[in-house]
Length: 533
Ligand code: GLC
Image 1 (cartoon, rainbow, N blue to C red):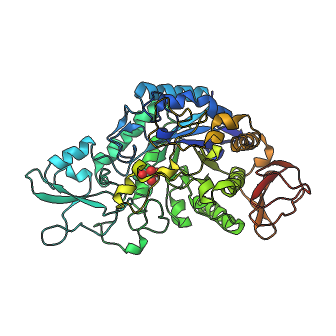
Image 2: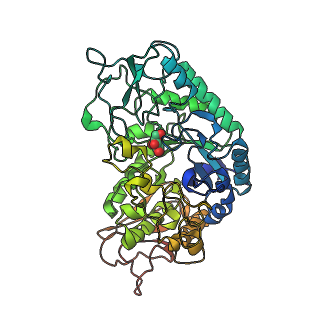
Image 3: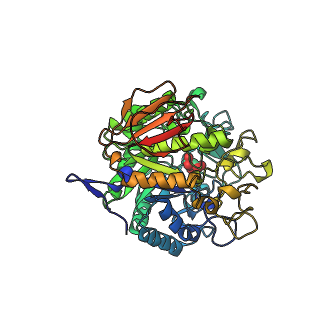
């Protein structure tokens, strides 16, 4: 069974405060029924691997009923499993088996929008303007004499306008509805009490089934500004590049929603809420982590920072101070299903891999919760696919100007020397897997002491057991140009990073683990990190 929250000098430390959580992008993790798409039984069949890797928890991307316009983030029924992924029995079996392996399970929750195939939206379309059915979404009349212009100037995160005009039941063009993402993902109206009540029902449905928490999708969405006014287009980001203040997101009313979610979750012991919060201002970010809101919030700074010690240090300091102001726990991630793989982002090839290994050691030395993305522990790169293979709605919505996120979602290679590398027993996988990944498979890396997988396993083992990881703060040391070194004041472990082009001497201490071997003289080579004890 899982270790429960630990005791720390009389006060109980909740398990999630230093958890290592592994993101399972369900479609791409493991396929049990040869249809080329990953599923719940596939995840269950690989729990032994995850235990061996040494993670504490899983975050499972959406498995709800969905027409899959956005691969499950368009939810048609939030209280049932899509047949593509299995059924409720398969879900229950996965939860039970995960717990037997000592692994907790966090599931995705999508409160900002539903699918256009959700019963509510179908009812909204068949009901007249101004009806209670329409009020659960954000329907408005268009602008211009005959309403042919969208109600405001907001773009969708995937490209194109954030509004789609419907045809009313009498056959004439009518109102428009808001969708911050695809047209198949209408935004809910969080001023409507039905929307609140339904989310509460959904929360309890899954909590009662034993989930250990929720990852809240677009946690900075939900609340919309009064009157839905036009905004300065300079502030609009897109799903793959938006980090600045954006008029469509982060409205104060959203905190009321998080307080409701928290109050429900608090009725169940030991559960966690982690928000997807694309908010760059530290103070505004911290608001989501006040004591009656979310426990954890993804800070995405490390997914966009260059491999440069000074810039990385700034990113780490911002992430720490954003949460320190509200006494919350930092939450680190290097990549996920929406952003480029670390190896590719940091230069690709051998250089990218070397830097990704170094950054992994930096991340795993930091205080707080860490989220790994499936395949990160294998050093997978992003893979550019031919146009005909692209499946992300971003590709179509952007008029084929942005390729979207498929490159970062290629299925996990498990074994063998040719596609689909044990991911599926079917002939093909939903996104094609490249030739030449035979050295990246789990099978190839498991017994190889120099592999990325071995680096992660070893680092996770040390992180779990070594007393040097005590303490929630960081103390920075003076370090040569292009380098940094930090320590947790409560512990003894020192992490040193060298992003400069030259070998550098190390402070005193025994190397516990390094991302690339030290030189014969014991110097730290370029693009390398080491933990010293
Ligand atoms: C989040 C998800 C992303 C999805 C979007 C809309 O950003 O991570 O994959 O497309 O929300 O639900």
